[in-house]
Image (cartoon, rainbow, N blue to C red):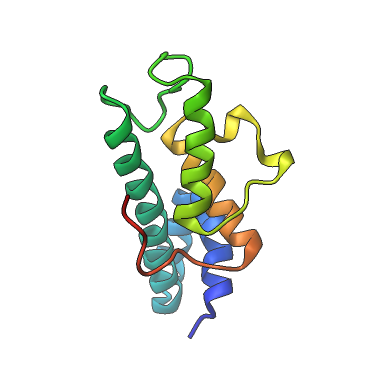
Length: 133
């Protein structure tokens, strides 16, 4: 069985090159690798879903995964602080000074990539029970 750390690290790779991993799993016909990919897709979808839920509670307009929430004008600079706080609390990660780049927080896709990469670097997965506000 794969360790949690290995699965989370692989989720970073999956987030970056999903199609290549799926192709490898299909070509190798490896049940273990396919299971790892399924697990990673679940982590990715869990992170994305939780971010979407937060944004839907705080932003009245529909936002697609790639929409730049700052360029659209649906959020403001104060909301950026709330967004960082949500990400830190919800996923038990810390946004370091070097992480505070608008490109990490400008869209659902960017936020998801940021969280998944941060979790992989920290060697942890998403929490089983997350808090609701």
